[in-house]
Image (cartoon, rainbow, N blue to C red; front, side, top):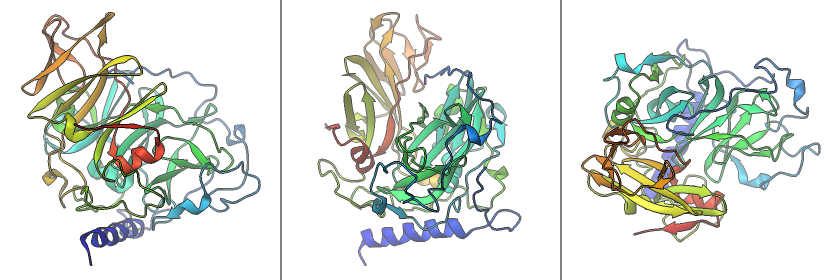
Length: 409
């Protein structure tokens, strides 16, 4: 058996094992029921309250049960390409009632290199450790007064957060147990339409074509998160209600660019290796993917670029372990953390360079950290505008963004 085949079989076993495991009290996982900026500010106004009736959304069959229903609009992708990944709906159980700890009181709760999803809305900063996300994939939460679903797809190595309101109606999201292009397919619990994790669009069901609002939530090393957000909170993975080997990687060896993605159907874009790590940016009509290796240098690097006529900087800092490499998350190879920001401050475009583990702008000599905040100098306290980006594998980015430009070297 080749290494590629072994990895594929292992991934399948991992998914099925996650589906069949039980909660802490020994009960089987339940079937589903029907019923930004570094200091990101998101409006909390809405046209409906959290308990708005589901009838405010169009009614129809469940796409989980009848994806080919004649009552649905035309699917956005071929139904044959939406395939089972092993578990049933919510067999990989989302966290619907997250419990948090104060970061300041738990600075050593994680290895400094462990990966977290970093989210800040309206001054409310929270870390969602990948040691939990890799087993649950979705956390339904309310951050800074905004109802959100934090999603993580291990198979495409990406984290995306969406506002979990549809046409003003608040809902939650679950895992469908299905994959499209080797990526998580979610479902909303209001209508049971199917949605892509990667771009937040309903692809099958009564809501087909509806687009969710994305909110930037980059992957970041715990060491960098706790330094950047000292008054934040961190998800308590010991209080999920489920028994999982948190801290272990069920996809050991998956972060290997010489192997192929699990259950991927269709043609792979051969401009890059399928599991080549890239930083994807989509602004206006311009879509680019930067090869992570071309951004990585020493302890830190700053890459000044222009995308869609906007001056940007890509910060990279060593210290984040790959969650998909070794059996224990903290042992993964160092892939570093990435931040993408506008270089415009007070109408002036800054030029950045790395100095040690931090960054300095040429114009004022101020020192900045990976979260985009100036920590000393004339601009101390200033925060750069965060530009939404994705840390992901090339196959995933190029599937959803086929017109992207790949920049290497």
